[in-house]
Length: 438
Image (cartoon, rainbow, N blue to C red):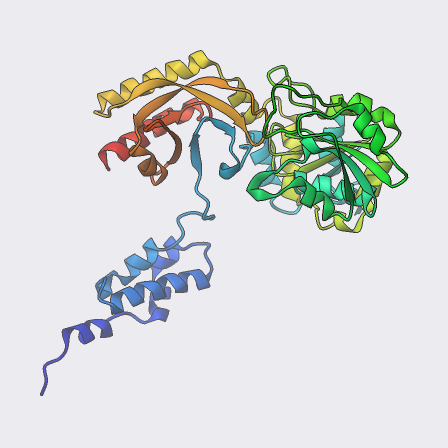
């Protein structure tokens, strides 16, 4: 009689799936997860045991280790890049009030219901009223799911089948290869391009007007700037040409900011005569991803009733966070833009001293931050960072907490601008672990 194959005998001792799913240890570790997710983890662990990669008695432990460690696969990140509005890291971090508002709105809420009358009400009215209060020049406000949606909806309502007059120097490309001309033409409008890349005059606009002109569009070239032999036309001059003026300010300032003198704001553009202003909610405004439309009541009402307005509608969580952002006294974006260079220097020196004491070769280094998110590209923000060997950067990204730093001239710069001071201890521990190991 042939001897028993040890490998076959070992595989036979693997617990059945139903017994593993009933194991109290798995139930405790996977509390709140669906049975489908638990079964997938168990099946993968059983397959590993069948291949001889783990022992049969280790199947339950492997299944537990494979369970999602958090409700979402997205990892919280310490933004050590020096870029305040980092598109790849989710743009604007929300204020504590906005986070609290999202939690409050996660259940049943009166987003479209009047508690007094017991009848249906205007959707997101509190958020709309908050924005209108912050921008008194806006007769009405509408909110959609992002800035591109706001502009395309405006073009569909005002110019479908007709012409939009726009400067060639303002036909920008936004993120991920999306280009403004394609976006506008997808709305069913035609473009009448005027001027040149670097110079456009009032006469260029005036000469292009004809019975087919539906609107003039002025776009803030927020993700680049041209210096030298240039000219452009202010909104106040364009507003006097007798056709509706739409201004896309891009980054979402509601009122002027002395720190960013070249960034247009909604209040100023409406005061200059714009019929409509479009903007993003998750850039300089510091809120959730959203598109804002502010302006004349009749125009906003037409936009609100367009069939595609429903497709661009935002959910209750966005409305809650947007309202909380607008009424907050300060957002993280505003704080990070204004953090003092002296404070950053002191923090960098303190962290460097702590790291050196732990045997980590680190130095404090000057570091220049930027606004990011396609806003104020000419602005430089003096700051400070902890400078490490460039090889540390990938290990920081894989750590807990995850730290995304900037590699510059073969150095890993851990810029402190967008890291709250209360996170410095966790940051130091992450750097020590990345350099010296667990």
